[in-house]
Length: 157
Image (cartoon, rainbow, N blue to C red):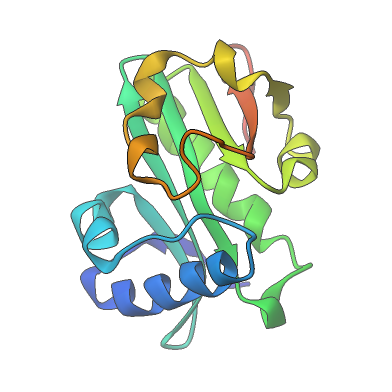
C-alpha cells in the first residue's frame, strides 16, 4: 500500500493534470497551476513509483475551521480506499493543528458521508469560507453540496 505523503513541488504538474481531468468531467472544480503551487503546503499525495495517483488539500480557513478540497484519485486506482486514506490524513493533520471543524464542498457527498461527514445547508457555513468562491465560474450559483466533520471527541485510526 502506497503511503499518503506531503506533496512536493515536483508533484504539482501531475496534481494539476489529475485535478483538472476530473474538473473537465464536471466532478470537481478546476485548480490553476499557480493555485496549487501557492498552496503546496496544503496538499497530500499518494504516489505509485514516480506517478501521483491521488491528491487532496487541507486548507485552513480560520482558527476553528479548515476545508478539505481537491480530492482526486486516478481512475485506475479507485475503489482501493485511497480517497478515504487521503481524507483521514487531512483529519489527522487538522486534529494536530487543533482545528475542530472540517468542511467540504463537493459533487460527491456520498463519499464524505461514508467517512462520517454530515450534510449541511451551504448558508450555514461561515462567510469566511466563501473567500475563493467569487473566482469560481459557477459563482453565485454554486451547485456543490456542503458537508461538515467535527473532530471533538472523535478518535482517528
